[in-house]
Structures are given as structure tokens and as C-alpha cells.
Image (cartoon, rainbow, N blue to C red; front, top):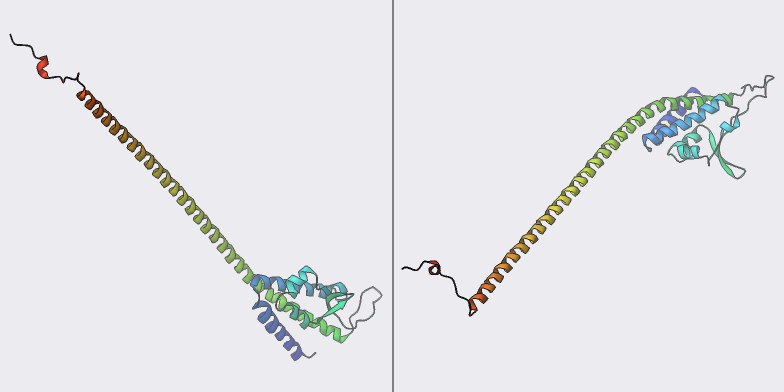
Length: 231
């Protein structure tokens, strides 16, 4: 692959997939998880390019599925760097096939001799550097979002606490008003009963006085009864 082709690959991977898909279509925290997971996949492959387990990603793997395949741009990124979806023994995988390598050397290692393989590795290294650079940016953005969410959470908790306090004070105020109203009604009833008793007593006294006056033996006292007779 010529240098212009490699630059075109780099530009497309960054602008069309990382920026326009992974970044713009997902919240910062989701983008961060996706970029971080993709970077881990590439780091493992580049550290051990001959280890097939790092180049064979099961689609049912929770981490791969939730952080990459279900994220806008995640699947497209894998395809762009050479991964292909295949079914192996009735199970779906994303597999990166690296081209011809030389036989195992005497010391047990494998020597890279195929030019196509080197180009594949170069593409992976470009993708790795793009992810590293963008991970810094998206991490800063994600941290800013976390701080903002934390502030909003604290503000919400304070607002909720203030609302609960207002509800409590309002409840206590209404209870106090109800108690005062109850006491006032009790006082009014006591006053009414007292007045009724007074009225009853007055009526009873008047009735007794009337009965006494109507009695044939009743003779009202006069002050003259108590004056000394003049000699």
C-alpha cells in the first residue's frame, strides 16, 4: 500500500468512523468505553500478532458486544481495520486474518517475512495511534460530563432535601393549625355548654320564683317589717 493510500486510510478511519460515528452518535461516556475497548483489542493483537485468540472476537462476548458491536461505529471500525464476521462451529465471530508468515524459527519465534503482513500491521498501528490520541480527548470530555452529572446530582439531592423539608414544615404547620382549630372548637363548645347551664339555672330560678310567688303561703318581705314600732 502506497503512502497516499495509507493517509487515505488514516483520514477515513479518523474522520468518518471515530469522529462522525463513534463520537457524534454516542454520549461521551459510551464513546470512551468503545474507544478504550477497541484500543485494548489492538494492543493485544500488536503485542502478540500470531496469537489467534486475540484476533478472534466472539460476538456473544458481553464486553465486545456491549462496548463495541452495539455502539454506532464500533462494528464499522473493526471491519475497516480488517476484521470479518464469520461463523465457526455455529458461533459468530469477528476474525482478523493476518496473511502469510514464515515458519517457526529455531528459537520458537515466528519471523515476519511477508510484505502484505507488514502492511496489515502498519494499518493496525495507525489505528492504534488514532485511538490513543482520541482516547485522551474523549476521556477529558467524559470526565467533564461526569463532573457535571455529579454537580447536577448533588443539586438535585439538595433540591429534593429542601422540598422534603418544606413538605415536613407544611405538614407540621397544618397539624398545628388543626390542633389550634380543635382546641378552639372545644373551647367554643365548653363556652356554649357553660352559657346553656347558666341559662338553665336562670330559667330554673325564675321558675322557682314564680312558683313561690303563686303559693298562698307566700308573703313577700317588706322593710317595714323590720322597723321598730313607734311608741
